[in-house]
Amino acid sequence: MVTIKDLEAFGDGWNRHDVDFIMTFMADDCVFETTAGKDICGTRYEGRERVREAFAKVFKMFPDANFGQARHFVPATVGCRSGCSPAPPPRARRSRSTAATSSPSAATRS
Image (cartoon, rainbow, N blue to C red; front, side, top):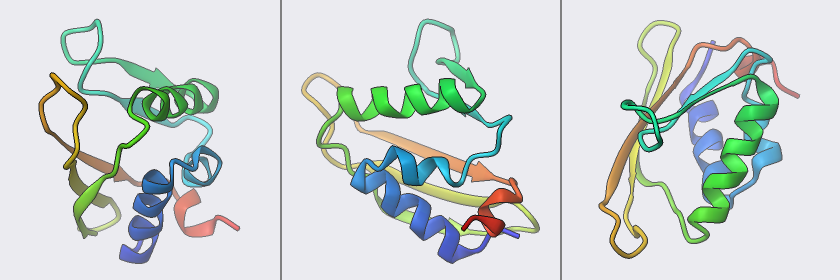
């Protein structure tokens, strides 16, 4: 089961821009959906390699990204992390995101 501690560690990995660490939370069939992209609802990345590439792309595009002001909660078996990036790049609007995971790998990572 996902815990608050898992979600805090996941968020810390994002703030360090540590793709390898973040990927320890991701299952083989993971999905990452962005709010921006060519599709009407953003862009969807499926599978570990595509998700890894997408995470690296985020950090390249936003080298100063920091996902602060996070709130964590675990209703039932799904962990949720909600926060925003307080320092957006020029001409970009402040964004808020919510991440959820129900992957058993988060609780069993080594």
